[in-house]
Length: 398
Image 1: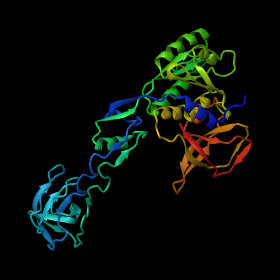
Image 2: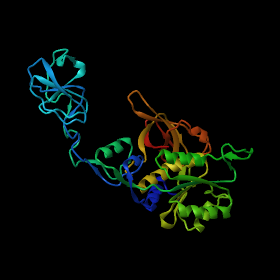
Image 3: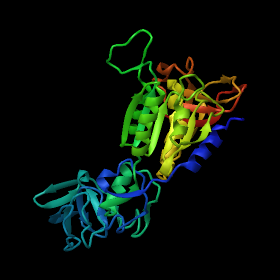
Image 4: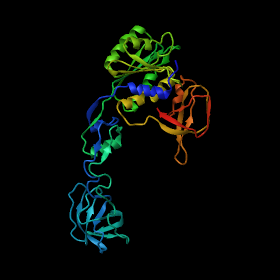
């Protein structure tokens, strides 16, 4: 049977992933969430003619060279009314422009003595100088944030400015990361020469949390078919998403596909025409539970997580976030396998600010140490092929 291309595998996964429900959260708890409603401007923005500098507010038509300071108006005070063109009002940044005023002179250009303000140098006073005009940013009712927006600090500020105490967002899935293998030993525990440290689960959990997923737990299971069946049955009942690492190839102790089938998880995908990560497995269980069984080699695990799992999770939350970006290779590259290639890269910028991807080949899919100080990987068409410097392709960040 022909293997699916990465693009076809991605579409298959997206077509079978259940959409996550909507929940209402306080706006302060929505960082990293995906918005599931439109947010509109509560008022004009700014809602009034806003003073943009500390100084004095006056009428630009004045012919005077100095002005009597009538009063002081701070941000948050109701607007005062200018008494005459011979007067000015001391004003603070963020305050409402006083009535009768249309110009603000910054404090740095003034000398104030005994309640009289004068310019330190001659200058022309123009209307609306240092004034942020009402509705110049957005008008009342304008769309500020669209359904599907991933909420970071700027978006949270926008929602709060629109008076949104709570937001409707996609619920977060309960995710369980499962590593498998008798050879894995926890960091800090005694280790034998024939064993290796358990690292994949730590990398996967870190990536998930770094991308804003909060409901993440992990477990480790040995290569024991009966125990795998027992524990995975529990995890399938208690989590919407399972991400397994290891046990999906063709080896004698690769029990994961068989056990998942016995537990009612339908295999939709097993094997993708790519390197690394060719043995990846995906299926769905009861109530739309999603199971991603990733190859156990560390480079393969992280590549499959970034290429398929993270985009699928965002899609389940109906995010409009792009999974990849376009970038050019910083140097020529040869790719021999007749499979789509995923090449780790470090991203840098030239003197014009243009991003470039410098290949950082690994010594095989077990060489996770080579991933340190890389930013992600680029996707290369199947080889054998030569790619010149400047070849533009897709970058997937860790």
